[in-house]
View 1 (cartoon, one colour):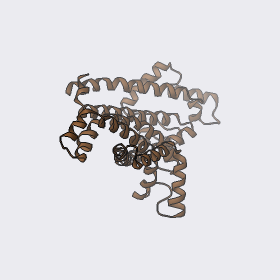
View 2 (spheres, helix red, strand yellow):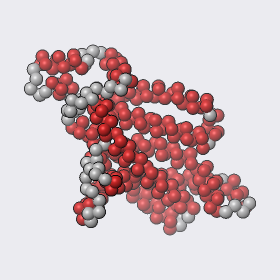
View 3 (tube, one colour):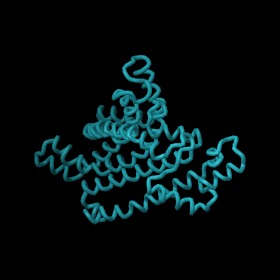
Length: 306
């Protein structure tokens, strides 16, 4: 196990370097001139040229990337064009809101998706299976922003049960987190069903039945444990889509997280913020997948031998 973890840890810096390079190139490909934006729309060409030199944009791309990577390692992601504040401090203020929203949504998705998928597998071709699959297809098909608007209209405007916008209390988490959890819940439910059905057709499950093991023990101790690998994999991979959904959800609910911050940065062409938020978000996805791989290795020791 230690050798497996060491191998994964050695590959992690290479992945993060690749991620930072992709983010750097993608931001440089965006239209617009950051120097002119920072100098102001009425600035002279001389002022723009001075700002270009100050930002280091007159240097070669490899030199710019080297400075960007070294600054990022020191925790310096630049200064916001709009607010004139360090991007790191701006991200630090909003990151807890996004993490809280994402964790709440993921707990909801796992807490509902896994049991629903198990029920669908146990009652395969029965009405519980059909009901779960219909709801899963609907959850995977519905547009995130439409669901958010319908929830706001129903539970805030008409019924007055929940706060409409912002993060004013614990009730403010309910609508955004549930809205954000719909898609991963549907995906996890369908994956759990498929994985459980595959495992329950194995010979060792029939042997357990023949030995008189209770159905509850078979489902939880044998079938689910062996079906966990694809479930954990899809949970890790869906973290990226969860971050993407958070951009829309936070914008609709006026949530003070990184998603709304990124949308505002794109609107104002705030390149340092776009670069910093994207780097933090993608790094989070990479780390989530890394921990998912370690968890899979704990569940299935055979993987550590590969």
